[in-house]
Image 1 (cartoon, rainbow, N blue to C red):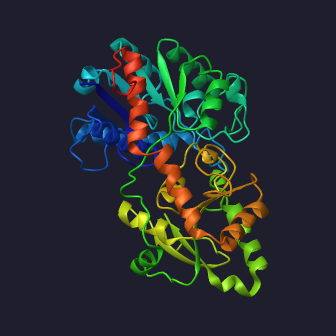
Image 2 (cartoon, rainbow, N blue to C red):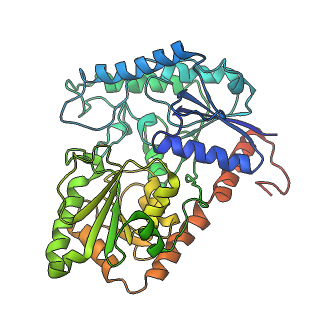
Length: 430
């Protein structure tokens, strides 16, 4: 039986963690011996392994994660909120029994004092195929996870706009150099979840010469599924006679890559356009940890806080007329896929991997990048659409045909077997 070990920093915390766990489950359903081992384990699932053998090691791991964040403030400009990872701490993983026993090592998100360049390079000693899914840009930059318009990753980084003291040999260039030295020792097979990530990898100075394959993430289509809208609203205590727009975590206007300021501006425009009809629209917002610290919005808003129950989250998607995501840079955001899987269309900017999921005016609306007016047009299009059932069907069909568990698992199995030279007649390659 093919043995695959997935390595990630956390167990389901964040999009990368969820993607890792969902892929692991999908592979197990296809009779693959698939396991997940994490740097820091929050949950209690006994099937998820950890590199920490005891409470002391776990405390040390937590300490290095926190210390990295504290030290980072000495180097990063305070007004910049772009995620950035340094290479000060790391740990070896090559002696773990499940890593040694695996046929394929599959890396996911390995930052936060986990696999620094030195310990990444160690993996080459195991002489096993290494697959690495890029959930953001960090693997091929000098530290940042979100690039925006910065093109320094095309060269060798340096002069980093996020650093207090940028120059040709700044810490971003030194991290780039460390990564380059490590990667030269490794045979890395890259998976890009979106066409945007694929093109980014192929143009990067660190990874342009590596084999790269586009395979999307997957999700639980039996959990995120269409539910009767009226019934969903009843269960959530939402009005049945209103247009309801759902949106995710609402950070401050300063959180650049989330695009909150564009959404708030768009809502103001929509309210002006609708005039007396504005009372017919409400918002539902999930993901806010602090219900008292939320932005003032143009429409009545229902703040649900953080939702840790996928069944309830799916109910929220199903209750909405559309999901709004104003993100300015995203690889293959799960909120979009989850919404579509529940039959709920999406309004988003044309950016990152979102166009791989949202088909303009078929299962949602792709607004012009950074145009609040175009985003408003998208919301207006939803309100005025005369065939909601058709929209819902297109949304669900998109996920089932492109992102369902079996489809994505088989694509991964085909890659694994190709790397191992063990393709099975009638199997993933048959």
